[in-house]
Length: 67
Image 1 (cartoon, helix red, strand yellow):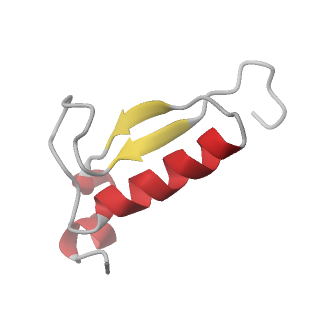
Image 2 (image 1 turned 45 degrees about the vertical axis):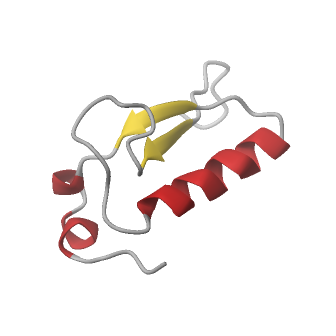
Image 3 (image 1 turned 90 degrees about the vertical axis):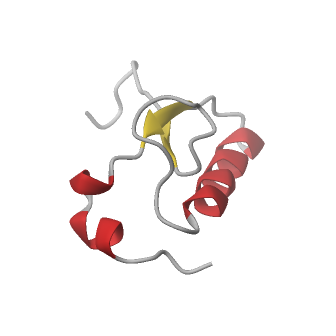
């Protein structure tokens, strides 16, 4: 819901740094996760990790994310 007072800010766990779920995403997912987490942190926005499940993103799951 846009403008919800109960917003949740999640960052997909591309490198399995949370140690929960299905493991790391495709090659290059870790740096992308770090970039998003850093941007939110710089803005003072707390985030939570979200398990990256490649099956939920078939095009990303079959390809390699460029470094």
